[in-house]
Image 1: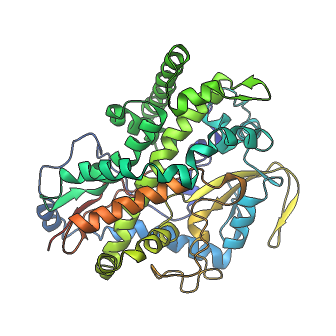
Image 2 (image 1 turned 135 degrees about the horizontal axis):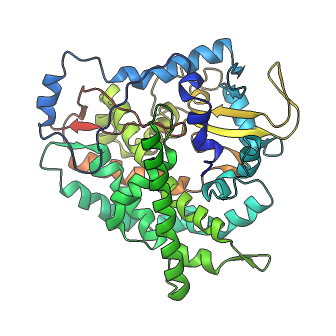
Length: 441
């Protein structure tokens, strides 16, 4: 299977080359499968006192972004030829001007010598231009409006407290494993009408979709491919079941929908299901984890939030800016254009670095300062224009409910264990794979 360009960029173009001198050592940790160290968090903290600070791999990308904004804000890589933009104004333009900067997955695949026809995610609204993009997006927009999402708050609250019930008395948890992952994946599974009990499968599939292939052996690449095929095989079965027995869920609604009298193709249906499952958990998972990382670096913020809950929305927005859960998005030029002083021809790959744009000093005064009362805060963490994240209202609500519940139930100082931090290995998303924390001290 030829992967969509967004997922193949790391392998075909070599993510290590994209990110310059950044070197982050990654190790398999079997996260979210229950294979955690049996040592208490405090014991692991003491054991790791001689190790490097966990913050080094976290901060490294932002040092690179700062250098690129200052020295090469519009950069063509000499090895793989693609362009990269780092400044806020340029990233916002690339994300917004769909007529010049295409998201079309088939266009990208063809430029790489593939037809791209067999990749459902590459055929989803994430990698589609108007008018088809507008037609298909409209099919699910109603389910994610702020008014519709607000009706989910009681259920999101119940799930959050059920998850915290398992850890609140312990004084420690892995934020990702115990809350940040199971909360959003349960919510999106219930919206789709699929059993949340399969969330370990959902996580493996999501990880495979967003993973880069750089540095992987052929066996590991085959394993990734098998996970992705497993997801599509599962949704093929779900779609067939819903054709026979429709229910009140998103999958049944997509099967019943039509555009200009035509039902969605099977590839489009699979693309919708896969995209909703992956995007429905990855963004919120990394938002919640990144929020805890921000608070660990600024411990006074937790007490400010406890005493003034009106600051909670601002804390969420500043986390989205400061450690953006989505760090980059690909596009392809449809025509010759100028960005800054660089002339870029048609059919050129281009990476818009969202993580860099949200730290641009030209848009955000004192951009490297975490300020939960920052105004204005026009970050582009959820994108811009026609591809603005469909699930943004849901992610914000999940984060608000989870943060308020944690403030209520986890007393004292929140502290992330100073153990080596493994970042998610992905071109697209930014966050920690594991995040042990303690409270009550």
